[in-house]
Image (tube, rainbow, N blue to C red; front, side, top):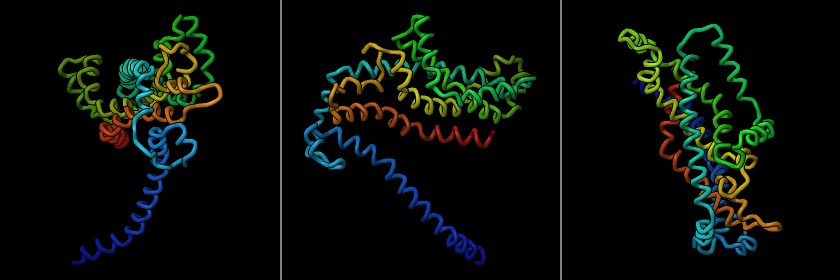
Length: 285
């Protein structure tokens, strides 16, 4: 009886806090969902309806005429370019970050902490101050205006964060597993590929989803390092629908909806892995 009274008293104390949390959560939900709602609603409007109607007015018809116009253009070329860039970049990024994190997390050597500090410091380097050097480098190496020019910068600028996350995650893997592998005759390479790397899948999923969104939406390097339509990625697709004096906003919104949709679907199906990976790294580290 006494325990029930204590539980009831605790619930009464928590109730105002939970109500306040729900209120702030709903407010934040409205703030975050309104831009997407505006984008979707506008993508179904005609240009005349967009100009004459209100910003958040529901379209008169949901005919997908703007989407048909986009599909008739070079959208699928942009989509395939973005897909190629993100797949190659993520494969190399995940492998390199895991290889770099393993010695920092599992091996003891003199400059371990200093190397990790330098990697963390590299996370603060702004992308924009490197655009001119990378542009010159791409010209000198003959990769300018190609998809290969985008892969290197995507890996380089996302690698510090990935190594930092993977280092924290790998530090939480029990050392007894590594010791057992060494007793069975595994060297460091075999231990990494047979024990540590497979156990790091939640961490790899976390940085894969996080970096996938970043690379998919990357604009600065795509704008600087590509010129021809054949090598443009999805963030540059809106340029096809911008005129000298006017822009067809409904069609641009249709492009943006189609661009955002793959990442939204990816997050819906991968959010559990993302949360588990982040929590595992936080608790174990």
